[in-house]
Length: 477
Ligand code: ZN
Ligand code: MN
Image (cartoon, rainbow, N blue to C red):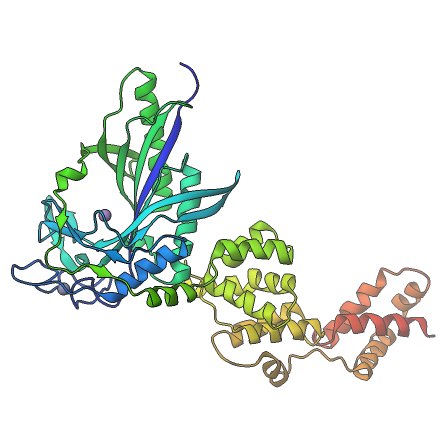
C-alpha cells in the first residue's frame, strides 16, 4: 500500500426544461396530472407520427450554454439512442450523439478550500422517458413525462469528493434558476444526477469507474458518493478489482446495488434521427440570447463582498434566489446603504419570503418600497421593530408606499419636540425621587425615564429625541 486513493468524479445532470409544451408535440409540460392524461400519438410513439421540434427547448439549452461560457456550434443534429424498456414507447430516445447543441464551458464555485472550477464537456437536448410506478407486485407506466424536454449536462471528471460535488451542483442549480430555464424542483424529479466515480493513487491512471444512476437530491448524491468511495476502497484494498457497472442507489437503506454491467455507446446503436431536420442556429438570435443573460449568482456574491464589504455568508444568503438579489441590487441602486439593506433583507424579508414561497423565496416588495422603509428608519420616523411588526407584513405583496402607510396608520414616531417635552416633564413630575437620584449622579436612571416616556407615548416617540429632551429637562431644577 502506498498512499491513499483519490476519488475522481464526473456528473451527468438531467434537467427538465420549463417549456409550456413537450419537446416534439403540443402536449402540456406539466407535473402532477393524473397518469396518462398529457399524452398524444406523438409522445406515445405511435407508428406513422412525426415529431415537430419545440424551438423554446432549443433556446433554453443554448442559453444554459451561454451562461457557462460554452461554444454554441451553428449546426447540431438529432440521433436515436436505442434501448428497450417500457418507459420508452418508441424503443428509442430521441437525443443528440456526436453534435450536441452546446460544447465545453465551465462552472466556477466556492468550496471551503477556495474557488474550484468544473469543466463541462457538453450539453445536449433529448426527450424524457415515462415513469414506472412499482406497486403491490405490479408495475404501471405513466407516460405524462414522456417527451418532456430534458437538458443533459455532462461534466469532465473534475470533482474529487462528495462535498465538492454538492457545492458544484448547488451552483449549477442556481445558474439554471437565474436564467429561468427550469424550476429545478428536485422533489418533482426535474433535476436528476448520475455519478461516475473511480479511484486511483496519485500519479496513476484513473481506475475502473462505476455509474450510479438517477440521484434525485443533493444529499442523496453526497451519500451515494461516500458509499461508492467506501465500497471501491474496500475492493481495491483487498486486492480485488472494481467492475465497470451501472448501479442504483437506495437512499432509504443507505446503500447502492449493482444493476447491470455498464453498456457502452455502441450498445445503444446510435444513428441519425431521420424524422427531424438538423438544428441550424441563427447567429444574431444566439447573440441576442447572450446579451439578455442576467448577471449570475457567483459574480454577484463576489461583488457584494468586494464592493460592499459583506461577509461571504451574507453574500451567499442574498444571492441564493435571483429575486432576492435583484431586490438588493435595485434598492442599493436607488441610493440605500448596502449593509442596512442587506440586514433588513436577511432578517424579515427572507423570513416572509420563505413563509410564502418555501424553497423558492417569494419577494413581495419592490426596491422602491424597501428604499422607502430604510429611509423611514434612517430619518427616525419609525423604529426597526415597528417596521418588522406593523409595516412590512402590511405592504407585502401590495404596491402601497411605506411612507403613506405609516402616516395613515398613525405609526410615525413623533419627532415633535413640544409633545415629547410635555411627556418628559410629566414623567419627571411623577417620579421626583428618581429625578433627584439622577441629578445626584445615578445616570443609570436615564434608561428608566426613557422607558416611562416611551410607554406613556405608546412607543411612538423617537427614542433618540426622547433621550436628548430627558437629559436637558432632568438638569433643570
Ligand atoms: Zn404528446
Ligand atoms: Mn440522457
